[in-house]
Length: 239
Image 1: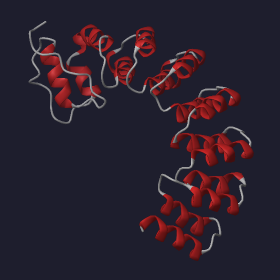
Image 2 (image 1 turned 120 degrees about the vertical axis):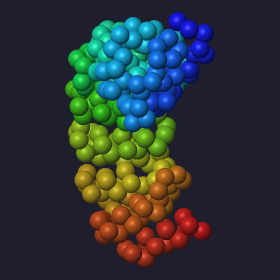
Image 3 (image 1 turned 60 degrees about the horizontal axis):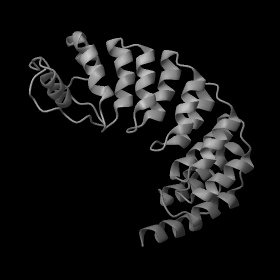
């Protein structure tokens, strides 16, 4: 190991970071090109796997959990190592990393659900819906996670649960109303789940965040709302 300063673990892993990491680990980064991603990095430096694993284990910034998933895919790191990494990290989007481990690398669904339940810094609503849609998690479990979150993503997750996973329309509408965001999830509820146009218009009128104007225009385009109503919403947003 050299005396080169340890680079901070980033959220996005670029060729520039790979250069810094390789130099920190005592090797020459001269081969690394500006367009390199994980695949090219692993092909050039397969013998650095254990050193990179140790670096990620000690990371306190960025998204080391997503890097652990890449290590499994491209460096051949063990599933068990990645699972330990994801369990231990307190930064980054480790809930999504757990979901990817179930989807692509054979990690147990129950393990990922525990990671997601205990997560404090991640986008839980969307990952819970993805677990229900793609990994066999129960609808009831996903609904509990979504109800726990009070953010824009909960509205999108609720609409997806109603559309793809059998959640009741009434439950999804309640979550979307509480989120007070955007309106596009409400548009999708009208288009795909049988919600009334009047309900969605009210949601859009009461929204405090998100692309409210776009949702209003989509209601006029796809759901039969009047052009005058949509124009009024757009004018209010742009005022």
